[in-house]
Image 1 (cartoon, rainbow, N blue to C red):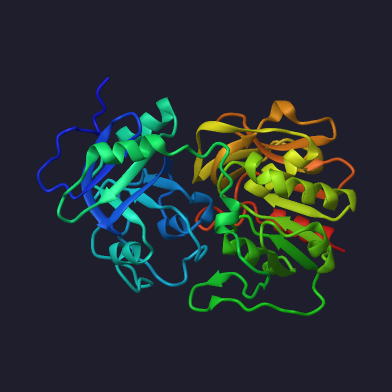
Image 2: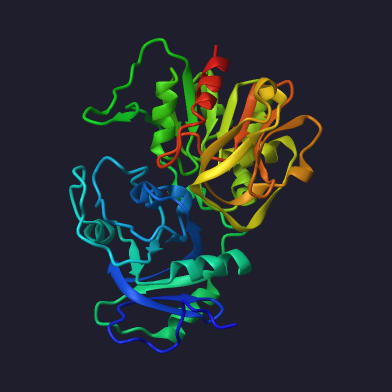
Length: 393
């Protein structure tokens, strides 16, 4: 069946293109950085927060298709970064990016994209592309931008076909901090910016950075902790040397089974010492693997700020059945059929029944697949940070 979003013949004025590994060619108007980049094409259903999405390290090696048609019209600023390391490599949008109209904007979105080295493609039937991903899965592709409209389509196609894909790929080391860092700063508020940290006798959380979003650390501070962030490959000895009251396992990109080769032994050692653990997204998946479960690649993944998740009891028995609207960004999931007897499934997706939360019996250890720090997204799930803070002393 012909894809209504694609055409093999280059239209007049086309300065951008998306070439899928199956040979589909989707034309549009390029913006942002000039050049080409290869990755996996996914879609995100968020209506706001495109700057936070594109600077989330969990999107490393991915091209984000935004289902909301108007992207870029609130510009960009210096406050809405989730990380200054690698995030999404580019984005695909429906409408051409207009001049910004927002009092917080400090620059145009297209200029910000160029400075960040991210390639944009506008004028695409994003509904058709999203349907294609839903039916056929997330494809590998090359996104390219040339103001002169000169593209070597066979070479771009070969690049897309040669890229191995995310399965088996450890990206956490690529986006992790290179050295230990004492985290500074709390949540943002309008007119006041980011709150400061309080380095008193608060419980100490050591956060292992597999590709973390900064708003997670701000929420840990808000919940009453002081935070030290360490690189992804930090040894258990170095973690323990910091005398943590608890350890946080961050979100991040790539295949959790690949990252788990070096992360899981550290997590198991921490579990053996009964140190409180809290994992989000990739950190949740790594915690599940450490407990004996397995993960698998999803057909299309979950990405957006409107995903319903239901509590199943266990440690949340008093609120079993309650539904949270959550923010998600993951292309791998914990296989709930592989959860061992000592692991309780605490949350499930109401979209497809996939696992969204676990707790380990007899341990102060739990994780959730979604992003309770939001940014962007609803704030239904801040209680998880409070729960973790309550475990620390």
